[in-house]
Length: 272
Image (tube, rainbow, N blue to C red; front, top):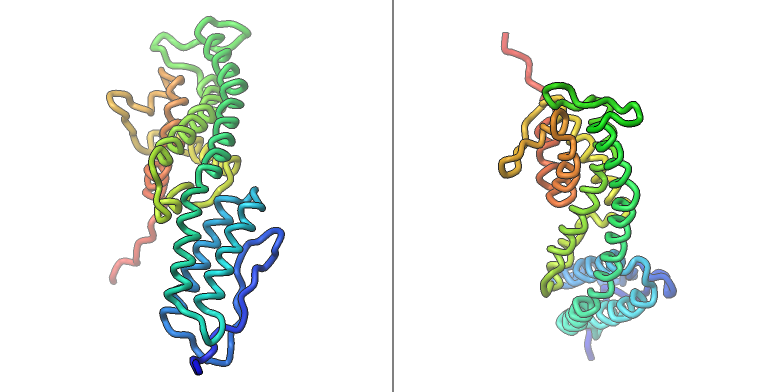
């Protein structure tokens, strides 16, 4: 008979109705071989992907975790397990995940679109009213001076309301571009890699954009897009606040790297 050591005695889904992970029970066989550990790591990574994509779809998660349970059992559990069989079963789960991704994509699209719509209906007109009032001297809103420079209060108010509009638009457009193609399983991890929920992502990016705007307003650095200097949002072109938000939402890694460059450095003590 088959006398292969038993490295794992059981695989089970942690919560059948609301699965989050696959648990395995170690057997008496000692340290599992590398191919088994690699398969287990791959199964766990796929499980995390399933949870990330279908966090609010327990029925789909249950279906995928049933497949992961089969892959784990066939590849790792008992004396008759086969890593190659387990990996074939896992590849089938990955293939199904790619086919089902449009369901997760549609849910994310709806969330991002609702965020953009709220910004367009609330923040955009408020900022527009402030901008109009400043240009025309209505409602005691300060007008631009003789050089066309807007009052600091007006600049701050427009940044407060128009940066979120630009950020929501940038996030929405970046998401569309990232999913507007056939995405293999390996590419799914690049969709919102930090795994923020849409509302959390919008808050994070808006806060980052406000900080981005502040450091430009104090001329910590200058950023140009095409022939436009974004720093001008803090003087003669406050409507560029929208573009500050858009760039932060659409090219967040670029803005993040700029912020990293502002981190203070610690210099070593001079040699005596």
